[in-house]
Length: 114
Figure: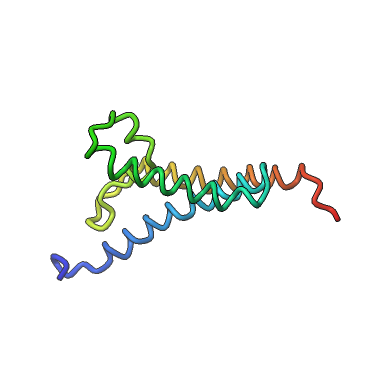
């Protein structure tokens, strides 16, 4: 049971974590637009796995904090408890919208006409 019966906090926390998916989507669109669509999926998968390892295993292995800070997920706070870090939210929005812009620019400059 959630303390105080506040069911909105986990729902909003889930939406904030959805920003991580939007950020990775933006990165994928940027990579697909600039380098080609065949590179987007594998690149995003590698980024997601590497940042997960850095976020989860970095502190356990005693890696430098600067390396841990490279993981986007380390900047979200405790979203399910209602404690959000604005840096992670802004960074996710920048990656999502910046990726859209870069991807559109990349697709536009490539000759995609048959």
